Image (cartoon, rainbow, N blue to C red):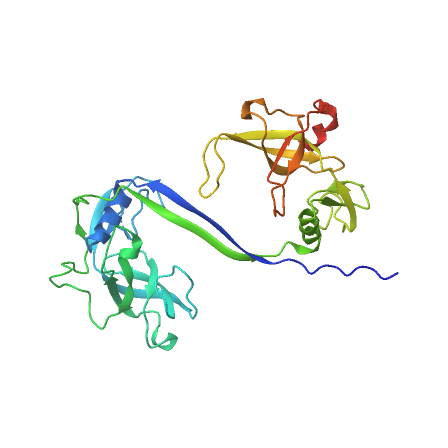
Length: 328
C-alpha cells in the first residue's frame, strides 16, 4: 500500500494593523506643533544638556523638565546605515541612509532619513546636513521630509532664525497639536507548518483534526507538531468534535473595524470532544448574557466557508465542571 502524499505546507500573506491614538503632553505638543511651523524644539535639563527630540523627564535624574529651547535645522551625522530597498511608508521611495543627526545646539541625536543621491559612498560620520521640510505640514515627525547634505556652517538665515546656540522658546503656538494617531502595521508571510496545514485542510472538509502526543497521549487542537509538555514530535492524527464545551469566555463590547458583528457578543474557549486543548470561537444563537461555562455547543458553517462561522448551543445539559476544569 502506498502512503498518501503529504500536502504541501500552506503559505499566505498576513497583515496585522491597528491605529494607536494617544494624547500629547505640553512638551511633545510643542515639539510637533513646532515642526508644523518649521521650528525644531528641544528641552534643556537642569545640568544644561539639550535633548532633541525633547522628553518630559530627564533620562538620567528622572526629574521633570519643561525648559524648551529652539535649535538649528542644521546638524552633523553621528552614525548611519544605508537602506538600499525602501519599504512602504518609509520617508523616501528611493535608496537613502538612516542617520542619527545631532542638530546644532543639541546634545542628543535625532533619527531620520538622509537623501543622498550620490549613494552610500557620499555618506559618512561627520557629514553636515540640514532639514528638508515637507511642503504640507500637519504637526508630525514627517513634517521633516528628510535631511539633505548641507555644505555650510550652522544655519542663521531669515527663514530659520536660529544660531548654533539654543534659544529659549515658550512653546506657545496657535492651534497646537494635542494628539496623534500612529498607525502600526506588520506585513509578513505566514506558514502554518505541517501540523496546522493538515488541520486547515481538514477544516475545509468541515472536520476538526488534532494530533496525539505519543508520550502523554494528550490530543492537541489545533495541532502544534510537537507536545508542549513532553517536547516530542506529534504525528498521529485524531479527529475530534464536532461538538464541544465552553470552558471560559468574555463578552466583547467594542466593535472591531471591518468586522461585521454587532456588539455585544461572546468569544469563548471551546474544548472539542476528545481534545485536550481548548480553541477559540464566537458563540451565537443565544443571548450573550446566557452564555456560561459548561455550555455545550456545535459549529455553524456558512456556504463556502473554510472554518466555522460561530458555535451555537446544542440543547444538551451543561457539562459537569470536573470534565473540563483541566482545560481552563
